[in-house]
Image (cartoon, rainbow, N blue to C red; front, side, top):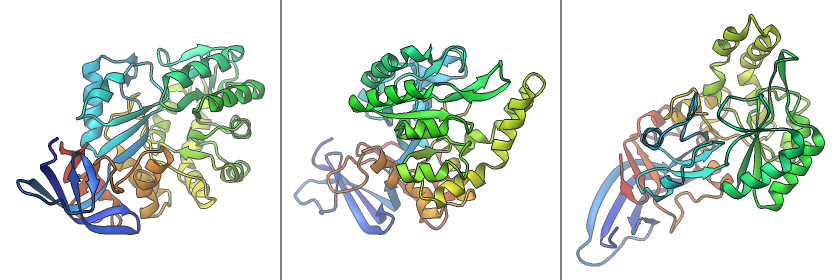
Length: 364
């Protein structure tokens, strides 16, 4: 992009929840609050309420219900997310190699967690490395080196012998694996639906829990004390009744357990939020869920009791800070979304972006 090509965003710019400015400029693909000067500027103006590009902190580009997808399908997934305003994705586990997306200036930025690590025959087929506990440290080290600062474990899944959700990993192996990831500079997250695995994972030093439907009054204070984040993926948890019904005959305990977790989902998230547990937006798109659901997940967090500002922060300012990526500060890459009205007044405006700017270019 030429230094003479300038984008002028004016109206209201939500640099932070309480830092609201009248305009910003995009020069050379980066944000500035200093009006550019000089002859021959080619200025394009966009009006509205601007926010940093939204974050989907649990999304699987390159994955569907059967496993890895071809590049053209992954491209459509990424474009669908972009059109919803999602410009930063934490890909929480995928067997696909999507590094080619990094070379595309028109596609969202992706932070990868490598491939899921699961117990043998204890996860969705074709998704994960399926291993036994003695191999856990080695596989965590491998994925820490392949990812972008994250590793993804499958913390619990249905145990067919028990007929219910049970923890996947012994405490000793989890502690060693998380310590190895941290030594290599990676954070660790884990898929967890149920209650049983949470205390061991948190006390072992885990950084985040996905879904976290099994949080209780006993474990929420521990999460808050340790600063362990949760990504509730409520748009995914909404499918629990359908999943439970399909398995009710064969696994009645598991089915009833899923339904209980579903019924208390909003109370669980609200209790964690009230206790000070960090909460971030994630949709779990790319498995059985469609892409582009970020606005729906923000709306779900509002239903769970988060304030409008905190629900927005969970997909914008706070989420970007948590992932170590800039927002709209001076000199940052110009990834932003413009809306018709103030999203703090009604988060539902997120479902209708007016303009999408990625790497300083209007792309939608």
